[in-house]
Image (cartoon, rainbow, N blue to C red; front, side, top):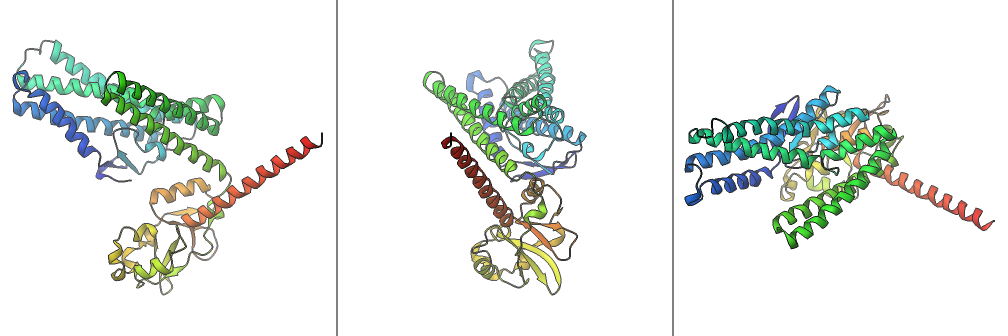
Length: 396
């Protein structure tokens, strides 16, 4: 995940996605121009631009608070979210939080929209008191506060409504998953139903967007088409994710240990390492060993961060991840949970404790190999089942 780190809240690192730079600039310019538009100017120039910038910043703060509401409720149920990246729609908490039951999922998923609704009410009341109450004739600075409060209230209302749409990556998809899970008692059935609904919502949004572009407003239509396309793609991703989860059900981290992780010396240059070690070992990781000591791990994820022109002058010990920073999983851990640990670490391998001598790694390569074998086994089973049914049919 990318973004500018802002700090830690509730034990979670908060990052702002880079897309907020143009978003905040766009909001500030749109409102600033509108409030200083010639004879129609509502506020003095300095106050108008101050109000527009304040509105843009509070829009970002509203989305951040929305995401942190999910994190706060998740922590109440013992869930840990190491990092949250604040982006305009569809925060990645959806991938991080693993509720223990349907009730937890419903409450965690609805925490964001509920907090946005609360902020909409608070800011809306402030705006209404200034715009329509005894302060309606107050000086310009008070009017500026009323404008900002009203705009932030409108945004939070829209944030609440949009996030309740039942399609990934919106909160409504997780809420729907929780409700179906509670009703059916089956997590996989709920996942499949949520994917179908999300895909259908995406199609509907695209159709509405195309109609809007022809008969109403091209900008609104374009936004609907993009939203629908995003939901359809997110649903496809979740569908593949659910299929993979079903495929490796029952497997553990120990089942995917890399049988040939290999080791390299700290002084080996990256050009040699890449050519001789990673050529046909995509997704693998090597142990960096100094004498008898394991000092770190290195793989594709590390060397890709270094320009290729620098490889001949860069040693593995300069690019490796220190062994103390590599996550460790137990061999009996569910393989899906172990893979999530690997993904969050953004490494090519994690250490696996087995109770046996030696160092054991779960690598992306070994996991992919196991998944491939499992898929082939599933295909053979399906082929055998089809053949058996065909034989019974011909025997009648």
